[in-house]
Image (cartoon, rainbow, N blue to C red; front, side, top):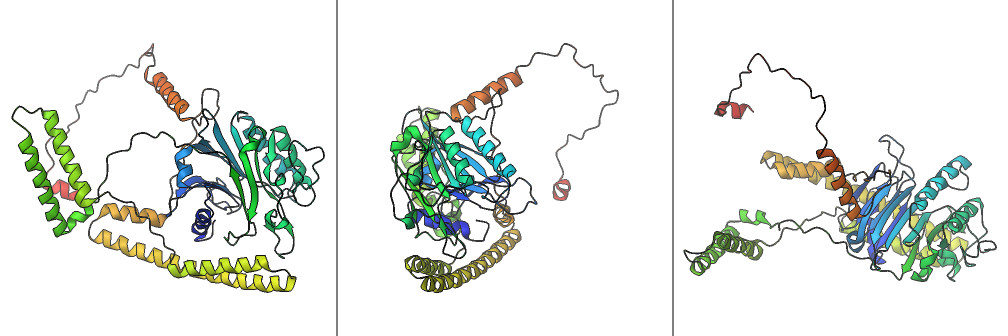
Length: 471
């Protein structure tokens, strides 16, 4: 994800496979925050908190427009874990998603213990009656032998269980989680989630787990090898018989109209004529005894209807800086990957992989060229906005060039120190906080502040023209 244009490629594959919620591992983004893509997807990400840290590890959750409406809250837990909660159609039941990126099997035991202890602490806070989903790159092979883990996994996983697999299976058993990739019978090519650099070795190290109580809601878990984002991992998908519910948001603010069209003399005259006609009708309908409230209501409706008819609503346009030529090259690279997947011999697979690598290099070169062109065009727009004194556009363009994205609000905690994700409980906690803050008893010994002996000479006259120009 740290590579230029990678987020746009991932979101395109997400839409192509009609995925509502996509977990990402090894994003290599620093700190924690959220970013809205030009195509409308929302990315919640968590990485190393240090600003000068190395761009390694990192996790994220990419949400479609449907999933965004059901989002209750989310929380970052460092560079390896991120959590999010969603409202479902089932009454009083939330869906909690935990996206992880576990240490590899070669890491020190200290790092593994720290990761699994942190993950267990997060799972302990979740309720058993809620839909809890644990997914991500666990670098763990659970194997097909499920002796001792019959309640946790099936017999359809790949390979043999390694040390990370034992840790992972024990964690699932302790928290009543079922490993979805091991209970559905599929071909081997639809189970392997990772391919080694030699393109020969394949392992199943990415997993999707769900609470045992909601095991029947899990319809299928399988790999989609057609998804292409130039990664050594395949896309692991899960189908759930569970619908997300749209959150009841607060009433939207006032409607915004495309007032920039009024700069056109023709549209300005049409707007004036339409508004004048509506006011004339309004004056005929009203009498001298009309209430002031009714007069204002009629005037307001006349203005709104005129703006809607002549100007139309203002649309937030996000520029997608990737050119059409680059999109064609991305499509050509996807076809190269399909050719790699269908090859049977090592020689033909190696030749197809070499062609895919060449296509990927061409895509990266084209994306960098588009990025430079996009930045140059933004800089030119900023210069024009500064020349004409358009400070609003100048600020927005500068914000885009700076690349600063809004960081999430820190999670609100109750008096016991537990994080609050429910919106109603969050409002109650804020009300409780301000009630205690603004209703403190008067101090027993108020400070004795002596009056000043010298009056300060303050000029209360209106500012002069020279002072305004100087300011």
